[in-house]
Length: 406
Ligand SMILES: [Zn+2]
Ligand SMILES: [Zn+2]
Image (cartoon, rainbow, N blue to C red; front, side):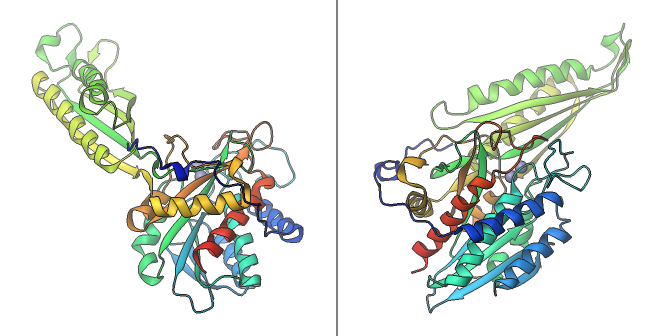
């Protein structure tokens, strides 16, 4: 993880210009209706026929040209104004989670076992609100791309859109994204340049020994003993292979599965787990070190192994110039006192990271609130996106467009 602190001019508190607001009460009311409609009919993964249709039709009703089926059910709305050559990509995710909602409000999920428990309904509504305003006012000079992606939750949607030519088919200079964040006051905003969020990688180690009678272990190769040594060996990687000041990572073994029973030494042990890191260089180091530990211990115990390291999310690494643009836009609409330009990195993951690997950009977090409204954790069956932050997010998008496309 890059621990370089941000330059002093990126730190909050230096700018107390008047807050600018664009979204009026009428549009806010419509955004709230859109958000609650999407909440009522959640869809998951790449399978978002109703949601993609809803979003596409809204964009078209604003007079925005829409291209559908990019990365399966992803879509892009394009809005031009003036003769400016600059362009920007604003991204929202549309997918929900396979969770049974436990809320009781009137716009609760009507799709059993599916729920917007990560606020992607809110992200889509905020971006639709900004699109509606910008299409009406046309008070910028250049091209805005409204990117609505599927399957963020499994880390596949952004990459699917990229693989389907997102950045070849649309000339996009830089990309930006927002996630709501429970536990941060409604309307507060935080970001940082460099590593904002961690990677997420699962691993699986299969140890092949030779099972047999529990009373005669010398006749076999006990994969439980080998596996136990491997788990302890993995613990040394963070402390012995990573720099204490420059790199941070997590390795957690979360499952230990055997085919043994009460008096039977098993043939195989499978260890599964999860890794987090803040840079791709660190991720490579973890993979190499883990396989070295597994291979060495298996060799010493006479066992064979299979090792797989499956990356689901890359680290989310913000670019410095775009972080400054995002910071300035947020300060204008939220006030400097509400914007933290040097927040701590987070160990959660986000597939917007895939877009940041190929385009400069910035991901930021918008407070969803504390307490009963907005304070419930993401991915919890009682979570709900806080409609009081819809205007904050949309105003940020509009300000960013107006600042970048002049
Ligand atoms: Zn989520
Ligand atoms: Zn999310």
